[in-house]
Image (cartoon, rainbow, N blue to C red; front, top):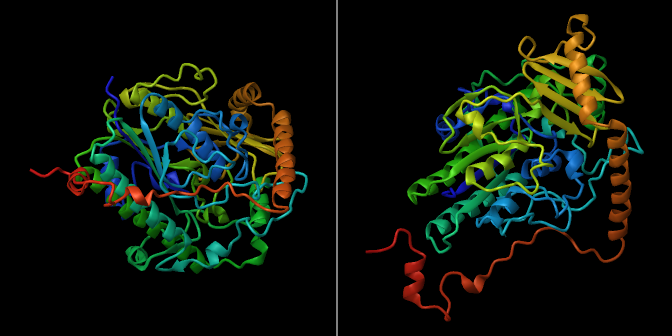
Length: 502
C-alpha cells in the first residue's frame, strides 16, 4: 500500500462550536475554509479530556486518561504507551513535530524522531492538583480571570513569540522535506498554542472583528447559585470573586480570541503555501485539544463537559474520505487509529486495548453507534468526572454531583437537565448501565489520589538541591548547516535547492 505523507495541524483551546461545518461563515479564516472544502468535517467531535496534557496524551495514544494515567497537566505520559508517532515510525515513516504537545516526564519524544522547538509549558510535576486539599487554589499556575480583564491588543507576547517560531520551523521543514534527501514518507505535526488565553491579539487581526456580531455569548452569565456544582468549583478555581467582569471585558476577550483564529489561519496558510509551491501531497488533519467556554453562562476556558469546552474542530483531507459533513459523535482518541488506517499501518498488537476507532469508514458513508466517552480528573475537580455522548444525548456522572442528561438537539445550550425527568427514565437508565460497565469511579478516584501523592513527593524532592530539567532542548547542528569546509560548495547549493536547476 502507498504510504501517504501526513500533516497534522493542531491548535489549542479552539471550540468546536465555532466549526459547525468548517469555520463559521463570519470568521476570517480563508485558509481553513479552503481546507474544510476538501475535508471530511466532523461537527460533533469531542476531546477525551477538556484539559491540555490529558487531552493530548489521549489524542496521541487512542486511550482515555484513566488508561494513560495522564490525569492532569502534571501527570507523566509513560514512554511505553505507543503513540501515532511510534506506529508510523515503526512502519518506516520519519516523524517530526514543531510546537506544543505538553509531554510531562523525562520522555519528551514519544515516538518522534525530531522536535524542532521546545514546549511552551512545564514538563515536570509542579502543576499537580491535590484531591487531599479540596478548594485550595494554587495561585502561581491556576487560571484566573485576569485573562479576561486584561484582554486587548499587543504586537508580541509569550504565546505569539512561540507560535511565530512554530510556524517558521514548520515551514522550513516542509521545504526541507521537498528536497527529497530522505526517501521515507513523513508525518509532520505542527502544534500551535493559540487561540488559548490570554486573550491578546495583534492589531491587524483585532481590527478584522470591530463590527463582529458575536462579541457577547448566547447565554449570559448566571448567578453563582444557578450553576451546577462542578461549574461552581471552576468559578472558585478561577478566583472569580477577585474580579469584576464587565460586558466590555467579555467583548474584548472574545474579539481577541476570534482575532487569534485569524492569526492561526495566516500561520497555517504559510505552511499550506509551502506544501503547494513544493508540490507535495499529504493527508491533512486539523484538530484542537479542547475548547473554550468564552463566557457562555459566565464560564471561561475549559475543564468541563459543556459543548464550548469539550467539543473541538476535526477535519481530515484524505484520499478515500469524501469531503462533507459528518454529524456522528466522534472523539480525538479516534485520530491515532485513523492515521494508521490511512497509512496502512497495523495496530494489531495493541488494538485490543486501544479505545479509539478509525474514522475512515465514516468518510465512506459508514455508520457508527458506539458512544463517545470523556473523562476529567484535574484542577477544579475533587473527584473524577465522566461523560458519554451518543446520538442526541449527553450524560455526565461524578460521585460528588447530581447526574446530568442533556438533549442536545432540543437544548443545544444545555440549560435543561433531564436526569430527573420521568419521561427520560429509560434513556437515563441506559446511560447508567453503560457508565457502570465502563467505569469504577471509586477505583478511578483512588488511582488519581495515589498518582497525585506520589508526584508531590517526587517534585518536592527533585526541587531540593541541584535541579536537572526535563524540558526539551532543541539542538541545532550548526556545523552541518549552510556551507562549511568539509563540504563541496557545488554539492551543497544543488542539494539544498528545490526545484533543482537545469
